[in-house]
Length: 301
Image (cartoon, rainbow, N blue to C red; front, side):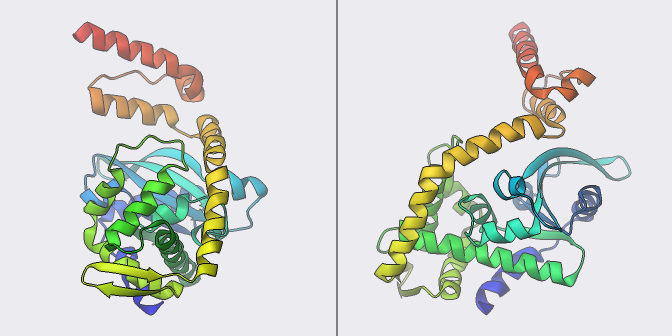
């Protein structure tokens, strides 16, 4: 585990801008967080005009809803100094549920597929919490790498195994990904994924042979069978669970209207007015907003 942990810490401790850390501290205060993880496209590109992605991990005991229909999602506009504002999509979930999900103890695949990708620890309250987050991210890597060994071909490059994993996990969610999306994720961080797979296999106790860039995992039949059984459960339940979470998000996504209108203006240049009614009823307001957008686009043409 030492080699894997060292590689994970390089990511968690990467340098972050003052604005990102200020935004993370504001989110921790607002949501009662113990730790805040920063991840996603802005972590990679540094484009602070985009929407930043944060996970706020909270302390305390989780209830039955927390254990199934997490995370709680919101949109925030955060003043970080002067006239600067950071826009953020914020997912909030209990720290203990995050740990179980990362370890693959829950049927969902979301956490370990997301956090096997690079993330940074932008804010944390104390050493014990930090250690818990480190352990969870390491667990996400070993969980993902174990399933990759089972889902991939008999041999291939590290990226071949990660591609097989991501390609399969996309089929468990109600989302439309362009063909080759998994390769785009890998091409964005090639060194990370090349390094991570053998380290994660070592930590997971999966033996493998190496011939140049080609890896050959040696999964014993019993372990392979158990991984397959766990995968079948996720295949049968993944879309239903994802659908339930999407329904929940449709009614509980705080700031959903502000987020949608900002995205519309950013991508089309058309500003749609935010009204109190639209703010309170994002689902009911959506058809009217789309009609207004269509009319304005038609008028421009």
